[in-house]
Image (cartoon, rainbow, N blue to C red; front, side, top):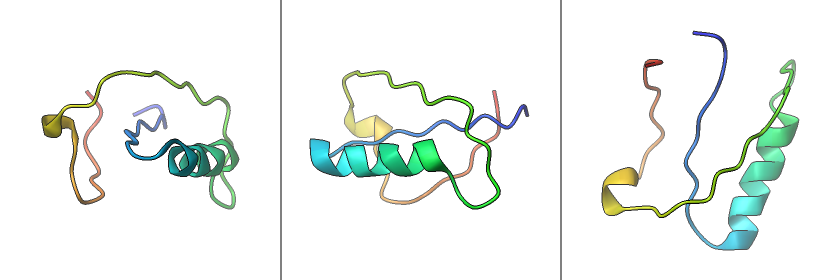
Length: 57
């Protein structure tokens, strides 16, 4: 609701870093205020093979 975005990235560290770099920049016209990185264990239930847009909880 407030414009925040949450993403879960899993994979080789160099590829995750590429995604984080893109998040820090954002798309054209975007204003990225902050990127918070939390390390944690990823379970099979966390993973999906597609992009999903979910409602804010």
